[in-house]
Image (cartoon, rainbow over the protein chains, first blue to last red):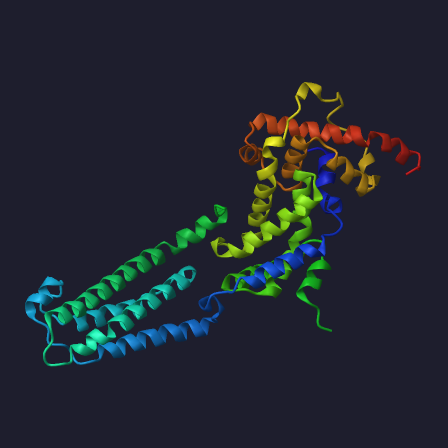
Length: 182
Length: 202
């Protein structure tokens, strides 16, 4: 690089355009104002933590209900062997609560927890029916289906979080050359 | 007296570590959700250089203003894709370059090296030091489109020739020869002013 090139590079700021049309910023502002942020994105970290706690507490309380009297053959069919699905789900939930969530995936994690909460809400009436004396096989199957899906989802979530956490350092290292595809 | 972060930035010609932290912090705040102050800080910091970059590629100020707006909107809406907050500037620059080239790539032409004016490569005098920046700016803008883009990306934006070749879809040797051509062209274009400066007429 000769002196002329060096001079141009060192003074490149002097060769920039003098001003930027203020209308550009006005346009950006008005376009942004039209996009409402999601509730999750507006939450502060402590609010996120409180939400997670609330979801976990709610789920835990739901599982505190008396264990339904489910038939052994159906339990086996849904892969619970002889153990109560409620206990299995509680154990997995405890494991999930203890699994660290990488910072980058906080929002995905919250989305997943919201999906689990939606599942709880959907199946709450079915679980209530289990408290009654004459429970139909259909209701039992619905309840077991709920437990199965919930346990599978939480197990999958724990597995993914563990993989992400284990590779967190590698991702951070790769970021030095990172250029997202647009 | 309270000084706004934006003012602090504008008072410094080069970004200090502290200012870089302010910008990184702004990106992080923006990733958490909409934050107009953070957006404004980033916009005020980079809009001028990005508009200049786009203008050097398109040579059309109005089109470059549209590109600038589009690029910032893209950056703000996709900011969560940016894993490293400190790399906002190169990421935004890539957006601006891609958006500017999108409409212009096919129109870029690269003159044959044989048509280059026969000027010596190195100049021992420091004639350019007293050259008004406005004249140099005009001379850059007068470069043929292809070599102006190569020149801008290499000298002003610190791209490597390999990156330029990949971005523009040209060969490595074309990128290098176009850059050399741009330098010679500039010196030829500025030559009439050299004597005026020497005689104190400018």
